Length: 182
Length: 182
DNA sequence: CAGTCATTTCAGAAATTTCTGAAATTGAGA
DNA sequence: TCTCAATTTCAGAAATTTCTGAAATGACTG
Image (cartoon, rainbow over all chains, first blue to last red; front, side, top):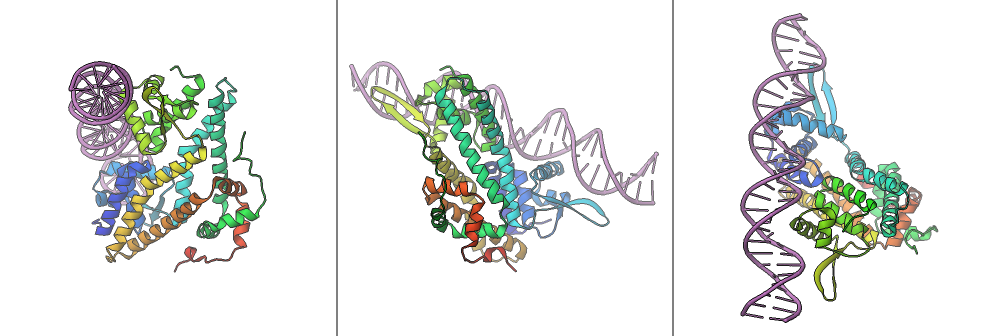
């Protein structure tokens, strides 16, 4: 599998960005390659397309599967596993956000609740700050859960509206208690 | 500086989460400690609160400053630097999102535009996928830019409305072209 | 079952990141 | 200018993560 120039550059970029995105170089590269391939690829093709070891490819694919970011396919008369990324970019985005939330936010939310459950310990400032942080995370993840439920079409419309939404919001009456606290 | 039990647990959690958040343990711990402290702390206090080396604290603070996540303060007659996190959680959140966007998204957007500038190379599928990805990122960052401009009060109101926004959106007429493509 | 192909596992090698202690730098006050 | 406290820098040590090659596992086929 000789990569085109375009593929090559894209793949290398994703490899470099990997560390900032919390994945390793190989995982980033595998994902990039699959993303640009119209046909599903097997581990062999990925391995020599990227020039990494077969075992590294195997581990990378396993990681991508744990992120739900690739789909496995099979062809009749061929017992190798083939992989693709979902066709729909919105689906990919939803998965990415959901998985990052699960790994980066949920454990902390759980921890904050635990700390609060242990009850007041006399450190008023810290306790207040923790409660405040938990509330903020709950507000944001609650909003995310709501957006998650919207069909893509409405989501796109909302994003396109952008700041015009501010006007719509003002026309609605509702509690604003979260901003003001004594 | 002996940490309270609550501080200790919170600090250790942020240290552990650090790697998932793209920062190292010490940076996570320093931030956590400052977040829970009502008073600004100097490097000395942080160092012995966390039990790390003085130089590690120095590098951690430098990193937090590069993220704009801490403020430096001074007291009359004391030439040591004191640090705090911004009081307002919304401000912290805005900074965090802005910085992550800058590090994790902007470089890729730039790269995608570069690849497109180089013009068609004959790999139709890859070219289409790259264009699609760029459009998606532009839509989302554009929306983010709009939200960024909203005052906190309106943002909270919007988040509280949540899925009720869907109804408001439907009442607005507007192009929906982005979802359907041939 | 034996043989073959595909994939996974895993111990250790290689690479990278984090952390430390010592030395260098900075800058305020004498 | 000199002194000294505070901070930063940096080379190498320590820890962690990534990657490889070899062996193990699984699973279809004749």
